[in-house]
Image 1 (cartoon, rainbow, N blue to C red):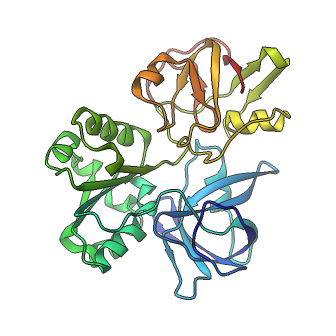
Image 2 (cartoon, rainbow, N blue to C red):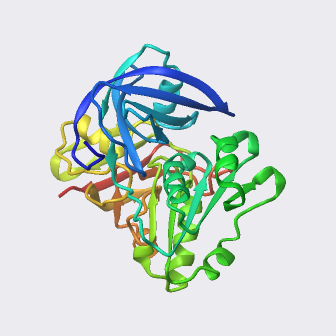
Length: 337
């Protein structure tokens, strides 16, 4: 069985955990049922956060030859919704519910040229793609940006396999991807695959659109948790239904509404499909758009929100800046479908 979009749940057993970079663990899970992980696949896991089972997604870096074992790379994010913290606390022998491999980010074999762009732990979504492109003799470049070489997961193996086709960019060496230059030198037959922080993804997407590149040749996967602002607790109200829910730092608006018994439509839960969008009727604060579904115009209009990933914040400046904030939590009133 190959990776699909159809959810099939199974048990998984942790068989290996290794520190491979700063705050990054290599975690190998053995599936109870054999299933193939195509390049770009991910697995969803049910993990306990604050005594509550929550669902989180992780890209599959590689799969064993017998198709039983799945390798993940998990970055510890202290200000996240708690999934990475819980994953880092796992031990060999622990068991958890996992899906069989799911595929929303497929590699299309047959393009003339490829560029793969990874930011930080986003490399986990691209390792298997780069391996396939190397194996079939494709014309490709893998660009990997991170804070430092010590923060680069799987770096040594990538350097050995890809040689000059791998380009490293490190903040501590003042080496950064020149996005305008990158897009300007691409030909129309190049496909670009990217995964990383929302700022990197937004910058590439804006440049791609401004350069009138073929949009179907730009493909990406999101973390679903990276945003422009630190996560804050906020309040969401649905006046027509008499609902008021507090959304904690470790939960999404979608999860909070579902826990309150509100019927919600959703699919990807990563800000890619737009199925969970709700209309904003009143806002105290600002929207931290973390999706890659809406255009810049739609995001600036602030009249709808992808509630599986985006949040409401009080901050008036960007992530980790000294910010002027409102007194009390941000509040959003919405209309659901």
